Length: 131
Image 1 (tube, rainbow, N blue to C red):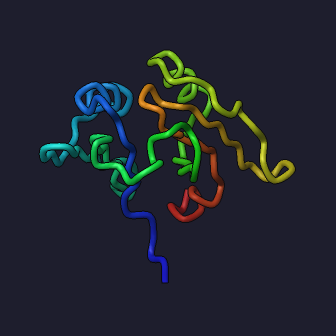
Image 2: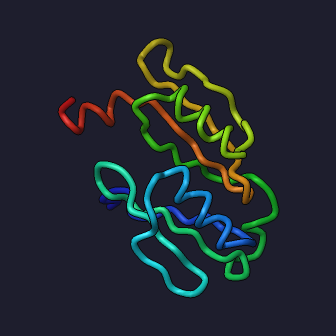
């Protein structure tokens, strides 16, 4: 049974640049580092965002922006999207209303290292927090 999100891993050919970019975006430094890997703890539940040197990627994992998209809940979707774009991410999917007015709104960018980063305003997330 799935218990909850633990770690999402992004690959980067230039791990030092990816570490610096995510540190700037998140406003924190990684809490864990070993050669070829850095990890940030992010958000209310301290979920893990791992950055891995692309030399360690499975075949095909770094051949373009595709695959699953992890959406991170954010309090201000528009401001977060603007910040990502200012830092050099590229829009992959614009701000999109989901669920016919139920409050789910998403956007997706491609980070400077080719990874898909989803952001979301999610009422279920806030309900779990009791907010």
